[in-house]
Length: 92
Image (cartoon, rainbow, N blue to C red; front, side, top):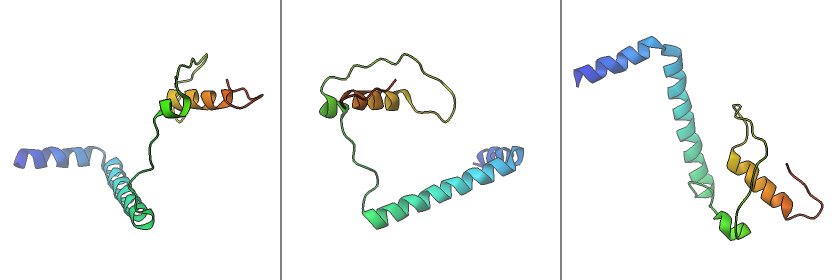
């Protein structure tokens, strides 16, 4: 048990600002989750199976960027599939 505490202390001392910020982010996330449960009475948004929305789901992406903070591949494919369901709408 003492060794585990020493390892944790070592991690904290290696990057103290990062560890403190991680703890603050985790605490803030807990507060937001609690507020959402209190306000709306749910812990997450409802989920829908893509096959319920589209039937068969087979799409291709011609280009994709693996840059940070970009949409996920699944998000792009869903948007493309929705665009196909709207007349005169095109989404690459």
